Structure formats: C-alpha cells, structure tokens
Length: 95
Image 1 (tube, rainbow, N blue to C red):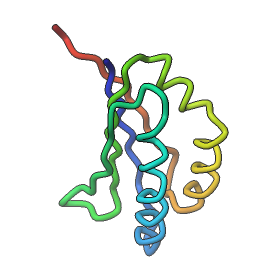
Image 2 (cartoon, rainbow, N blue to C red):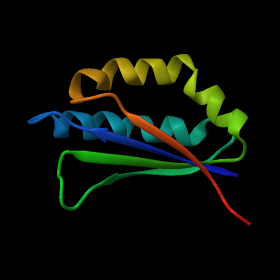
Image 3 (cartoon, rainbow, N blue to C red):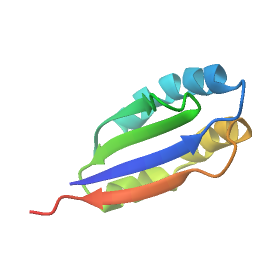
C-alpha cells in the first residue's frame, strides 16, 4: 500500500470554487481501481492551502489514475484556481 500526498496553494478568492470542484471529484477518485480511500484537508493556519491524502493498493494503481483522462480533466478545472503547481509526494510504510 502507498499513500499519496498532494499539496496545493489556492489563489486568493478562489477557495470556494476549488472546494466545490474537489468535493465532486473525491467520489470519482475513491471509485478508481486500487484506491483505498482519500480525503481533502484544509490547513488551519493557512486557509488557502489544501492537502489531498489518498491511499492506494499499489503504485501502479496510482499511476493509472495519475495519467487518466479523468484526472487531466480535473487539472484543467482546478489549475486556474491555483497559485502554483501542485506538489505530489508518494509515501510507503516503513515496516
């Protein structure tokens, strides 16, 4: 199992639009093959910073979602709302 951390900085005045879009998308992501769940979080000290944390069965499952047409569509919708490019970190347990 892996976890994927996506960090995004939302442009001033656009957080509501971003949040509405992400709420709609989270359901689709959770239905993707190999996705074990995910959540969207807001930083308490920075109301423009959002973090997506998702769990995937295998790295190949994440990669399939990452390169999917559906994710490309999501990025097309949210990119104009971001101050900078998203930052993605892939994590695995150390057991």
